Image (cartoon, rainbow, N blue to C red; front, side, top):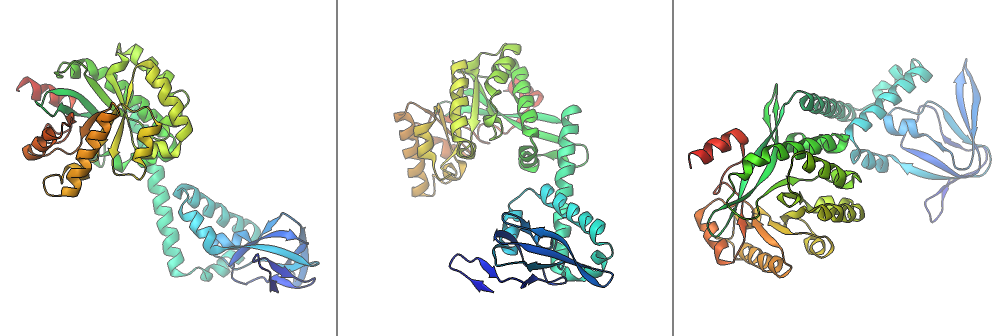
Length: 398
């Protein structure tokens, strides 16, 4: 066996590529030549298949950690492109856990159907570490499937709720608007925050249903929320996910919802993170312009936490900049954080954008933001997120 400069493996006619019982360390793509697949039946080695250019073999043992169940031999001079186990494992680790789990289940059933007792006799080839990883994957996949089912059930049984956090004018504390924050009142686990379930919704497509539900619920609650605002341009902010901003029907869905709820488009602000626009730059720009044509506006959330915020300010039609709270929280103690916040406010104003400082938790931070002419603030200093009924009581007693 020889290796050329491109790491191909070259086999001569009659040479074994691997034998039954060998460890499955890699799969092979045939670049040139022909191989034969041989299995032992009734004590005799028999050819069951010929494979040629462009075909792949050895992939089953590569993925399910079992020994080879057949011998593969070159019929004539054969050039193979090896696909090492490590590369496949890295790709699988980055893939969806449910898909990984289903793949392994299918492979196991393939073994049982085609190899009979060989699976049980070779199971010792799976190391304790590999078994642990497979059990972990099974648990992760099961959890994800259960969570996805729970989200669907929750949408059908009114388990989701919106909490609203006030966004206030920095100069005098007047309520300018609210951000809608989704919560899940899980029947067994109690109140769940977005980090506990949105990742599943994103990966399963349920995020579109959750997104439409959020838009509708915020629109339903807006007449009441609007009564608590104290500025000329009140708004409610709703977060958009990457999947939603890749939905060509989003603008029409928003328009339909606002018409049904008798909500003026200018009263809806849509919040995006850098991740949303990085994943779908072209579709994001097109859909954003359609929504702006309706009269809605966009805010870039968590500004400063990503790696390409300045490029987004240049490329996308944004009306509001929300400065990440990790910088705002430290403006009294960190000169670097203060300068980042100050310069961000100045840049946003120069671009005709308003600014919201996140995580405003104290009078001192608020006063510092007043000094640098920040427009709005959001955080526990102005009010914690709360359901609509609690907000009604809070503002009634104010």
